[in-house]
Amino acid sequence: MRKKERLRRALKGRHFWNNFATAVGIGAFFQQVTEKDVQAAVISPAWQTYTLIQKGEFIFGRFLNRTIGINPWPSIGGQFPFAINASGWVNKWTGIGAGALGYGLLPFSGLPHKGKVKKTGIALLFAGIIGGILDPPVGSAVQNKPSTSMARPTLATNGYRAGAGW
Image (cartoon, rainbow, N blue to C red; front, top):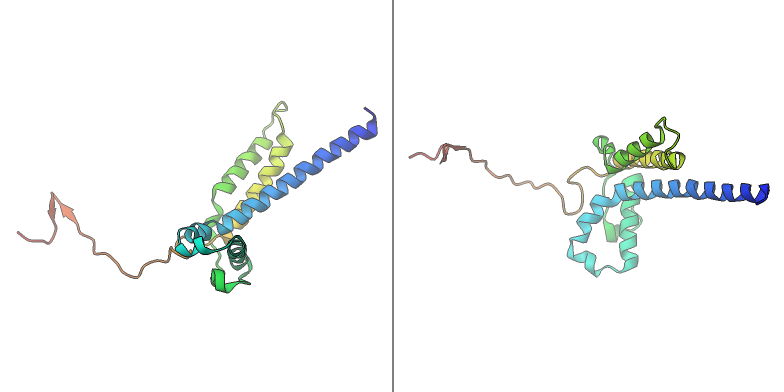
């Protein structure tokens, strides 16, 4: 092989891994932001009547609503307030990204694909952090609205209900 051809092949491989890491990061971010809303919508009976285009509009509308506060299709997805979830940055994508970054930073020279794994780990780590902060807090999805009714707790002592009398 000539030198130019080897260089061209090396650059082609580098471009693939750059694009791969970027696509993985974008996919993780999108999934993190829309996961709770989609899970709540799938169990509703209205979801079964949506066409594929309406389902895409719903998911993309929720994504835009959660990230910038605008839903271009409020008739399908409804409006939800823009919220920052400070505790959401710890999620599956940050854990996977931190693990991959740690693998890439190991001081051993014989490990395969260290640079590629490190680049993908950085993308996943940042996608998980940013997506987790924009992720809706627990209980804010369509079907997971907190209830206003409360149940009265009963305390049990030695098999008898407390306060029940004899």
